[in-house]
Figure 1 (cartoon, rainbow, N blue to C red):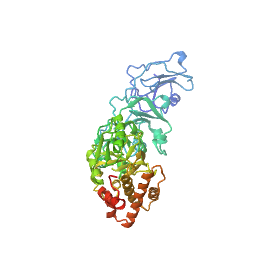
Figure 2 (figure 1 turned 120 degrees about the horizontal axis):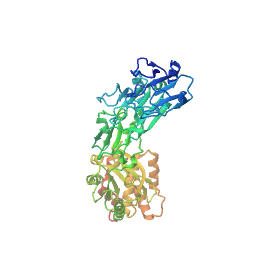
Figure 3 (figure 1 turned 180 degrees about the vertical axis):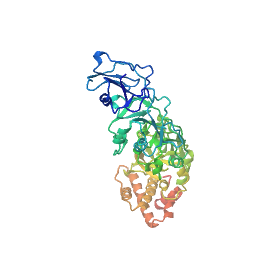
Figure 4 (figure 1 turned 90 degrees about the vertical axis):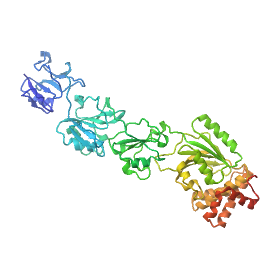
Length: 537
């Protein structure tokens, strides 16, 4: 019988088996012409340990494969220095046992299937280093409770050429998975001064084997922003999908380190959002307080289209602009289109639009606006922020300015209904954001009354906004338009602007006096007194 050696743990098959540091070390220690090097993970039932090589094979090292690799860890080696080549033409020996298992727990209270069970803290590298420092075995598995190992074969082992690598098994289609086969001594040595696991010098991503993750928990929310739902949720798992209407299939994101654990909005407007537990530690007023957000999936899926509310009050081009808008929406066959007409008063008309809408946000298209045909009606508000109104741009057909005046606005329904009309501008009373996307061209030059009324109200707001560089520039442009092709419209727009400046100075900017401009009746009376101008002109 030849000498018998083991590299990791004894097999218990032979009383004379001894420890060797390597196959070469076993050959040096051998007192017989050949020696066996055995692997305690293999099943040697029925194996012929009396096997002797043929004479012409006596200078060869003989290797028996396993079901996984070309080398099961079973060698018959001639005493050094006789080896000239390796002979692998031998029958397979099955590996039936597994190395120890370190199990990482992301979820408090999950089961303890590992030989060592450790709580996940911050990242995989630090968690693994703490756990592996307690492992006496040379090799071990590292697994995680987010994965389903029902069909996983823990008898897998690496090739003989990859023994000191860190072997990574994908989680689903996530390359940076949660399952590792580790050579413990080299891992501890190589990570001692390493900043992140991704910098490990000998990573091996096992391409043909992956481990499925368990489904991510889901939370349905009914607020206009996902922020309150994240605040109220007690995270027991590393990731949660928050959804407004329907759950969506979510990507598998890496959990290796905090920067990998990104917030992932799953559709336009972030009705569905994949949120990591760490996000809550940063949360103040919006999801964007968390520094790691991945929007690459956002444009692949769409949320429920917003209602479109067309609002008119005696505008001469209302029918024309409605027909143009209706034609565009009918072609899309997605958004619900509503016409609100003849509601007097700024607050009352805005509340009427809100009551008519069925979506949490809705577009309001003023009758003066000829909508831009290229506008993307799939646009959505950002539910990862606080609820707010979104003001688009419009091009003024008379003075050439392009900003939020007379533009389409995506209104938040709850904010509208909660607003009694506190300031000079209904929209600006609530949280709002300017979206620099052109919504259309504002045509208000079809009547003297409409030109005067539009300019008068806007210039009052601009005067109230001073001192402000942008407001000052716009005010100057309103008072001295450059587009002379609309001669009569230019005249009455300029008059309305000048009257607004005069009125503002006369009342010394008094808020109560300025707010009278909210009501059409007061405006009509003032215009008639100043110029004999009325709504029927």
